[in-house]
Length: 330
Ligand code: ADP
Image 1 (cartoon, helix red, strand yellow):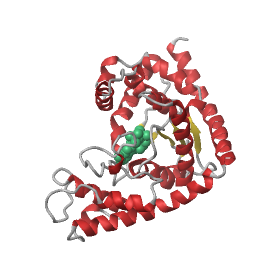
Image 2 (spheres, protein in one colour; image 1 turned 30 degrees about the horizontal axis):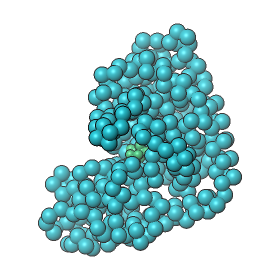
Image 3 (cartoon, rainbow, N blue to C red; image 1 turned 90 degrees about the vertical axis):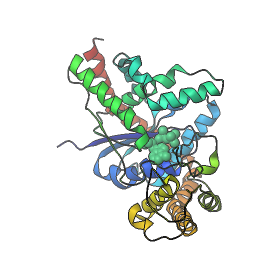
């Protein structure tokens, strides 16, 4: 019996956030690496879709890989590597560009948002920003992936990967496994603490609403205590009407293994909720920060993990991508 194949990744466009951790990384560590044949990638090619600084991308890739290991990914259980170390991603991406249409890419919500932001900043919109979901489809399909554990914001992109797999298979014969997205039950979309109507994203400019995994405990506490809350004083769980409080309840629930609706009934003030949430987040991240410090002091180990990971990943992707080249007529 074939084990479930899992693939997921993080972009080195900024420091990893609590959103990345609760929405994705924690599931990879606690669930996916144990019950499936899993690959986790620092998807550095995706960091080039917006204005970038070469040295910073390299530094952030390294930091992201170190953090994934610090969070508990175990190279004995899963494959951890850097996307650009494996040529098959870019090789397959081109074939999928020949499968996708420009209309379906222009409809992507993230493209719409980020292209507006790039234009407002007076930057050109890189063509790769439009084709980004195609490269992401290649990331997924190259490994015959069954499951893609991601936060809510990636739902539409995984849907595109499914569509492209189905279309390619119908047109050129069965080549790709059709993947499906999985999301955590709680905190699949952690919101910015200063603007609870937009998601906590690592590349947003205003860092005060974002908890970074490597923030000092004092900084994390301050950010949570200053979270924007809704008008009113009673603690109810309502993501539409009370997004600020619902976000804190989601984070506290995820950090403590509770349910947000139940937690809501246990608080009668915003202050107490914030204090408990701040402490829970600090305790949740403490072991990750400690382990990161240890690993950062041992760059040889991280190098070795990434080298071996890339080798394993290449060996898995190569036959799938070769098959796709033959199927499409090359
Ligand atoms: P970012 O938007 O921070 O650049 P990435 O694109 O690198 O994130 O995504 C890495 C993983 O983290 C993805 O699975 C994504 O869905 C998840 N993720 C990112 N932000 C959040 C968030 N605010 N809440 C929940 N999950 C998130």
